[in-house]
Length: 246
Image 1 (cartoon, rainbow, N blue to C red):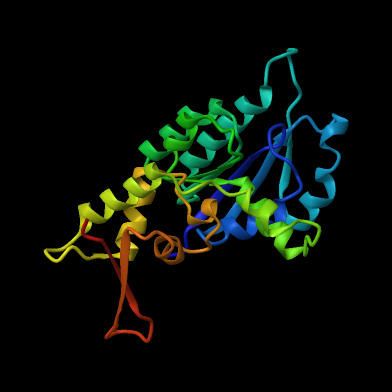
Image 2 (cartoon, rainbow, N blue to C red):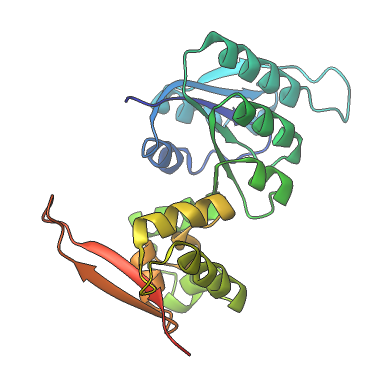
């Protein structure tokens, strides 16, 4: 099934620097058939978006600020989202913002059966994060952009500082998820573990900790065992994980 996504971007809240990386990320989850960005385009602060919009076929939506101190952009984006929902032209939404004002919108879209992906920075309030099916930090895209551009001025140590530490809380989350899915021998299929981790914590992403995939993240933690098994239907190995016995 071709998953069609509506990508709605809060132009007042998101930088234009990593739009290319952001659109490549969104393409992993579906086809972005609707791409709109909202803001007051009379403001000089949004001028950097012009070239980016043309390169990525994103439609700008003009929204004047009617009252000082009030964000009219949010209202326009919410109204459009509901119009798109009732048009039944998409299967999911990608809301690009770090603003907690979109928490209720994300919740409402999910109530209607839509898959909701959020993209924002690490300062995004938790209520908006957990209202989404999946939440991706823009810092991940920044890190990838730095690698792509060959940011040689950055040492490996400074790049590591951009990643979250693997805390006991993270290890406990993974461990409990494996236990939830384990068979009688304690083994759980890694794909199922990844899916359940996402449901438990929408912003869980191995890239937050400096790993491109879940397997190397789990391999880096001494508390878990990893086993590869033959797949009768494919050349690709099946990966299973378990908690090591204390």
